[in-house]
Amino acid sequence: MRLLLAVASSNNWPIHQVDINNAFLYGSLDEEIYLSAPDGYRIATGKVCKLRRSLYGLKQASRQWNLELTNQLTSYGFTQSSHDHCMFTQHTTAGIIILLVYVDDVLITGPSQPHIDKVKHFLHFAFTIKDLGPAKYFLGLEIARSAAGLSVTQHKYIRDIILDAGLQDSKPAHTPLPLGLKLSIQDAAPLLDPEPYRRLIGRLLYLSFTRPDVSFGA
Image (cartoon, rainbow, N blue to C red; front, side, top):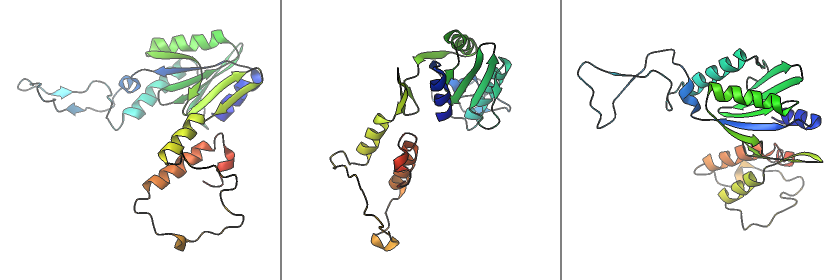
């Protein structure tokens, strides 16, 4: 993600975002799956409900969608990165087009707007997409373009963390812990429910995307 944004910023490329509607419904099934009929729906004697396509709720739905998207992109000329399977590239006469995929959210960047528009048209033909235009908010990252370059922040993400932790009325501390402090397991009683603490640590680790200064504390 950071690499894509850095490449786009250094080359002054546009970055666009699309959302694929009902993505999991596009996946094909490799096995036979039968359903129980919902209440109120009567099945004729000798008949069953057989699933013909992937459906939300299936344990394999996300994988089948990923396979379908990968097949469509590679058939259009994209190459899946062997280092990051979420990244696809396509070489054109104008330069390289880069796609970054997270489930059904897609970032597209390249040397020209017409090339990006062609990719959008292809995706809309293969699936049904919502064109979000220039990328502004992607996976909790706020993206802003200016003459000075590209800025990436997580203001909303930070506010959500503060509210969920109940720290909205706390005073900020520039030095949260004394220098050289050594913590001990004996300093406090074990948490009755460690899940909220673990979740907070995970969120702080993701926050280090734009705030590397918190990575040591997390």
